Amino acid sequence: MIAAQSMVMFEKAARNLGYHPFPNPSSNASRDYVNPDGVAFGQCHYCGFCERFGCEANAKASPHFTVIPLAVKNPNFELRTNSIVLKVNLDSTRKKAVSVTYLDPRGREFEQPADLIILSAYALGNVNLLLHSGIGVPYDPATGKGVVGRNYAYQCGGGATAFFDKKTILNRFMGAGALGTCMDDFNGDNYDFVKAGYIGGGGISCSNSGARPIQSHPTPRGTPRWGSGWKKAVVDNYDHAASVGNQGAVMAYRQNYLSLDPTYTDVFGRPLMRMTFNFQDNEIKQMNAQADICVTLAKEMGATKIDRNVSPVPYSIVPYQSTHNTGGAVFGADRSTSVLNKYLQVWDVPNVFVTGACVFPQNAGKNPTGPVGALAYWAVDAIKNQYLKNPGPLVHA
Image: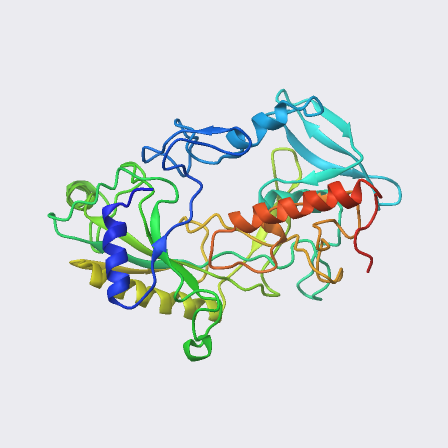
């Protein structure tokens, strides 16, 4: 991958301060490449429309490009698009799944029989489906009992927005979804958290994913919210600002969980899923400590003005912070505290498996994509080499 100007400045500043920066790991192809499955990748041209869109150059490892076309070639595979599964149906014992109920693109309801069901939606979608299907005991924060919805964790963020003089041109309109430089000096086990007074930490990075003008218009604090003053500030700062951000870990707490809402329903008349969450003292300490580090880095980069940022406390879902939701259907060795066994198989309904970040018991200071993929391979290997040969629980407890 190429290095954006802000990345170069961040790397130099981090090294000057004694840290250990490195390029963000990415599944974007920096040159033409054919992978072992025969899928041909094009070269990324840093269009700036990467992280929320399909790739016009086929330069990133999106499933619609790398996995689904290969699956379609298998005569046993059928893809039903624009459909939504409403429920997994169980037999009279409540110990075996027999089918799923889904709506097709025309809104018609169908029941699809199945011997094996794998839930592989987004983390929150999987938990929602488990709750609506009556699979597993819903978590009760008052008693601490139950498992579905337990261990929900978000990520804590913040950092610093660095504003530079007009001679510093950053070409922010270019970029790729994971284009950036990061460091883990304050993440995981790389830091003396006894001295810091908190645990978990977070990765600190400076990224250049592409600043689309309607989406990105950084202005210093104190700028008018609208009018000619705001417009001038947008023009003056658009290509002279960079973000030095913290992506911090969040622990699981008894009072943070997912459940079905007692009042509100979705378009199908089902209870909406409700998120009950707030940052706790550990995360608040972490966010503030990491924000101070980000400010120091921004100063070393040569910023003329710096806005220090932390995620809102109490937590607010309104400003975008992260899409890295974890937990709610975690795996573990104890069925009283987990939905799944170590092979991502539902304890209570052995012919249902669940993949995704919902299986994580905590939320780390890293993107969840790598472990999500690794655990999917782990589960598939167990299904292929153990379950299909002898259907039933793979772990007895």
